[in-house]
Length: 178
Ligand code: AR6
Image (cartoon, rainbow, N blue to C red; front, side, top):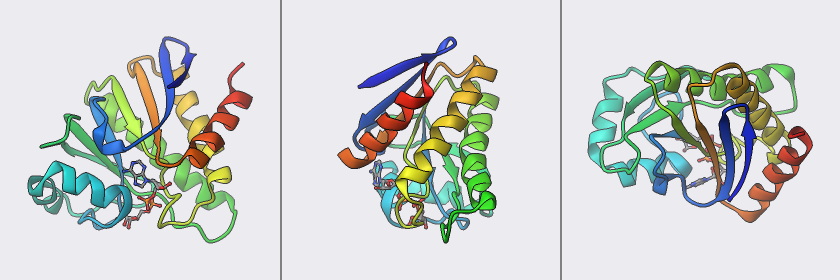
């Protein structure tokens, strides 16, 4: 696992499955209904069990770029932070801001709960079509800036499904980190 220090926190990159992480919270790449789907969302609901969907039903959805929190039920992680990334159509600043916001709001929600470790998938880069090479710099820049500003979160881990995705993130991190 590759890791870099950001002030008093650690940022980690690994290839793997988000549902298996033992961080206090894992982040779900959800949709606005919060009622489940494919990809990360489907995998998290399968691993957490039906109680997760029952709790999600009480929340009334989530806007794009925002985040909400539930318990993790049968997951190792105690909490799931559900965020909704943007659907990608073309490179433009509004879409980029929404992706940034999805990461930032997820970390704000974690911080409000006193959560110290969070694992993220690469939001919007599956069904929502955001190209990895464009999403990785936004993801890493947003998380890095948040950790610099807020020491409470000690560990953020990006869990990438494929070796290609891991390499994209590694390259960008190499350029960001001093
Ligand atoms: N662990 C880590 N990463 C994964 C996993 C996993 N188990 N499975 C897939 N990925 P996606 P989105 C990667 O489609 O683009 C759902 O139907 C995947 O390779 O899960 O934000 C929701 O309900 C990709 O790089 O999320 C929404 O409707 C990344 O995770 C919609 O898809 C995100 O892919 C959200 O689309």
